[in-house]
Length: 463
Image 1: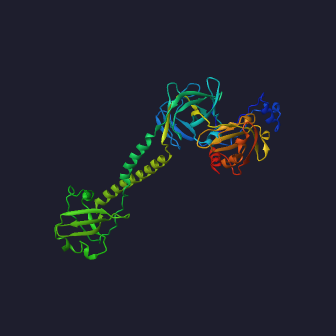
Image 2: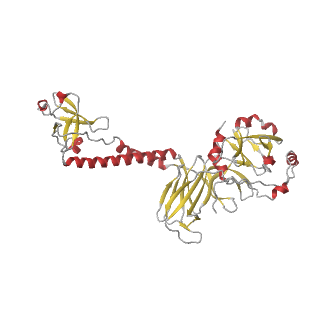
Image 3: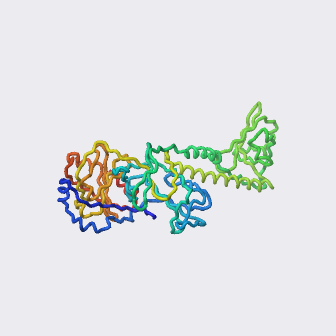
């Protein structure tokens, strides 16, 4: 079953023997019987998360790199259709990553776990992902004995457990415990590659200086084994391009009757193939601006060689930008696991709060009671911890927070209808005065358009 990245908010209704809970409900009474016949879901398929989509050649092993810097290693012939038959040709692999509070809320995946002992704990995530494959519109499965190595970019250090989500029951199963991240080995590999590419792009190939048959040319007799910089210049003629006419060897050959013992060739700045050539003897040094000229067959040979250099240069420049962009996306840490089934996975640990203040919350939305939005949920987001703590109409009386955390609230109420409470507004309520008491918490509507988990993150980041 394919779970698209839309938000599913569940509301549970039940009876409580706690008189304080009944007292809390009296202020905003609701006919539970009339609600119980509803689906219990707030359908918000307008709220999405971006996903990476790759086209796979099914008979080839492939490494895929996501926009967030995760690496996927897909073996050849890894998939089968649900009827057990082999897919042919190509397939699509869709990979979604949830690394922020907004992305987790928009995913609709639960962030609580029921332990084997029956306790329900709140998750603190180090990264969640969903991986699916399709042939056309038909969802594929991993073949028995095949697995995909996922190197997940993670924003969190420390040990976390690895969980898989059951598509049908939407409950988590622990797969492995106490997994630590590893340093991202690709960063060093990319740096080594950039050094090699830098040697190619250090200087751009230059175009030859134009010449005409009337130009005066001259030759320089050198030993290419002794002067390596002249090796590619064998057979060329030279044209003086300096500004001092009296220094032109073709016009004043008497200047060069002396035998020079040392020559140095330095390319000059600019796009033209011009060199500063220094001729040195025991008595003096002459420095001239010269351009190589490729007569006859050498012209075609040089043009071919120059074309090849430019092609290598441009390819290296393109590869450099690709590697640098990938470096910007890479995470310092990766979490590794081999998945043998397509679906949703999460690196999590129990969210442990510090000093807890329980408050019987009555959430309102610009003054409107929660009962006007019975399917809405409010999320408590403690800053710096990837925990998304959900409260609905029935569980609001169990609201609790750590007063020493920077807390924010956000609620998705309906299509493009999002409410929030900043940390400054949260602190101004002084909710620690209402420990084990009823407290009204009014959230304010966000006026801009909200379509994605990234938009939710923007709300949470605002003051």
